Length: 137
Image (cartoon, rainbow, N blue to C red; front, side, top):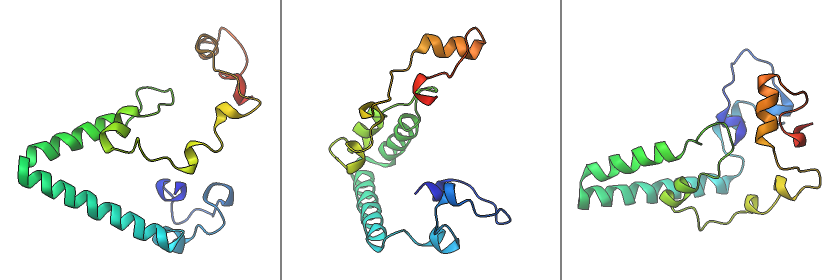
């Protein structure tokens, strides 16, 4: 999925570490697995159907407001990583529990240290040396 979201130029050479082994034109056009396209099309179908129903009942202003709220809540507030709790509550994805929710969490690794915001700001201002977050070294 990361290869589809990053912009690439046609004249660029293929970067295997960033885009993977099968990141050619075929990989950009087709999803990695046939079931993934079925899941995406079904989710889009039901979202469109729900949007059409709310427009028929409440008018188009509610859908416009929902879209604006989704745009506002989908952006993380600032430079810190965010859990996007408001966006998940708006879209109803709080109940979805995928494998990415419990596997490979950085907080569970042995070398993880909580970032110190004061030290990070001192590094940015040039008052202190070292990495901004100790886990990034």
